[in-house]
Image (tube, rainbow, N blue to C red; front, side, top):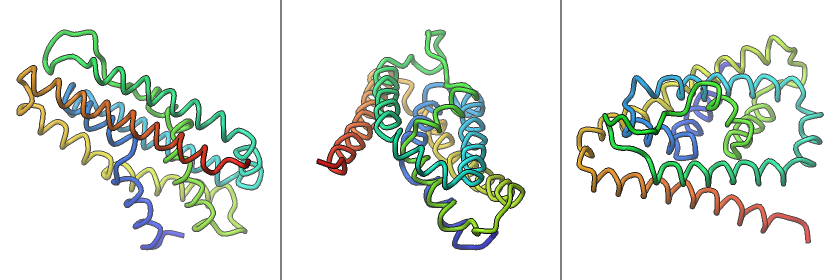
Length: 201
């Protein structure tokens, strides 16, 4: 089960741009690496739990997901739009503003409406889980996915943290936050358009 193609796939999917990584980079800039740790851990452990549950109930999950797909896409994209609005109004680094980094539980729960996370866990389950796998095999796969995921997403938080000192001027920070907000909103829009094109007529 633990092989190079699996680890390469999980690492590639984890490190490439997506809602989680955009939010981590923005959180690193606005709150620093240490305050972003709960967000990172929530993503990785939420991803592992999602992987485990999907692996255990793959056949049932596929049917359930097909019927809930429009709701999941709408919920996920609505949340991304809200996060984009929140990002555009993020406070200045080091200030006592009202902004707070995303917490552990919220980050873990976000995986259940994150379209990229669903695509990732379903592909891993289909491609790398043997038909004879039991709950323990699935748990090992989930733990591996979480362990590979964490350092990959941490890169985004580290980059954000390193940019923090360079963006301490209010104008530069505002431009960064508006750019990250626009990227999140564009991601949500792209997902919605893609879903509309795939929908049966």
